[in-house]
Image 1 (cartoon, rainbow, N blue to C red):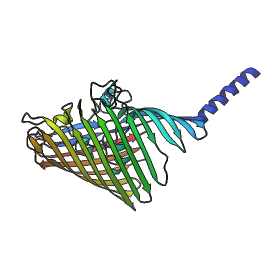
Image 2: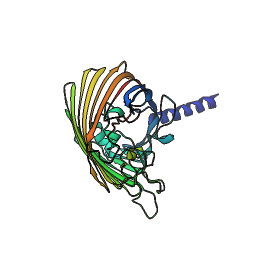
Image 3: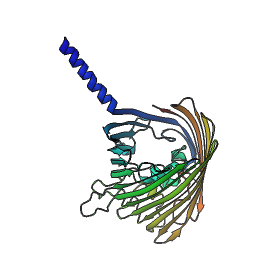
Image 4: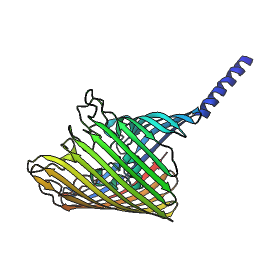
Length: 387
């Protein structure tokens, strides 16, 4: 009997030590609601859709105290469509995040795996879509990835501790093609600042042949990439600032995206395909966003966003300069810390020089399809539960 009691006590002590040193959390979000699109090829449409204010997800994360201020960490997170149960991110088991690393309180954090880039980490929180609004209020085609349309595979990432309100970091995604290390390679850098009422972020990302099927693995998969190209280059730069006074937060964000030698690897590029048989040589976006959020009570806020986007694309037949004006609104009420309901609306109008393209049709990210003319409206009512 004494041996049994001793063994039970020993096992209990070991379990207690493991519990004290290791922390594992299971978490998730279910965001599901109804969307009304007023114009899809000239007809209205109503759909049940998942993951707009936040992507629906199921995740596991944890850390282990290694002593001396050092800890090991991991995170596995999948995305799914709550209306159908299907996996997101091209059907990947952990398509949102899959990483492991080490973290030091004084030296920072190093992680490896499928991860967010510096634009998402440092600049996205300055935007409406990357902070309180989500997918429906993102910039046209999410051309700057502030809404996290793609992640970076095979990546090594560093994030610093916070010094006097400043945090910085960078990421490198390996191309993994022998003799062509730059093929489907990605790197990014960024920094943020937060002190008192001020918050600011800045980021840069460089992608080489993103989504290229010729790469063995690589940084960006073809199903992830907004824009693909076997010999293409994509560069994103942006900066933003938020100022909070009382219950109100005002924000301004600038981003620019430059692509060279893009091709029709997916629907995003296909929408820019010239209709006159010419070749698309380059594509450039410039986005200017103003956003506003007012927290009426701890449980209720409203927000608004206006974005002006100017694009320029060069073809073998000449240049064109389309533009987008987009307005977004959102109201959110929380029943508890875990459950809220929200109402969103987005309006888009396209214009400018649209010669030789199909860009005379509006398309709001998250709409049921392209409009039949230069205007489109999407309204969404949804419930979100976090666990």
